[in-house]
Length: 140
Image (spheres, one colour):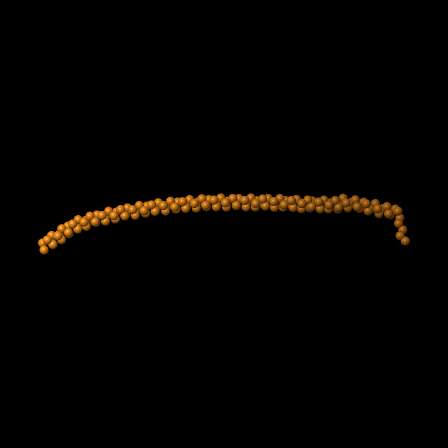
């Protein structure tokens, strides 16, 4: 049967506790310290990554806002410039139309004056021709 001697039991128990104490000091505490540092590092990296993601999301949102503002400003500028161009076009067309009307009126007036001149010249010739016809008829 199994014979347990108290002295050896005590020696083994002391040996076990001494070995446990030595391993705790040499192996377990450094390993636990390394595990704790690794866990802290991973948590720190995760927090940093979260912060960076939040900052990038904020940056993207700010960029989108600025882009929308720029688009609206450029659209307003485009509309303003377009309206200015249309008003200048209308002014230019009105000025050209007025100039064309003035030129046409002037040309009509000149034609009318020349036609009146030609009529007066023909009237003078008509009077002369009628006098000559009457003279020839009277002579004949």
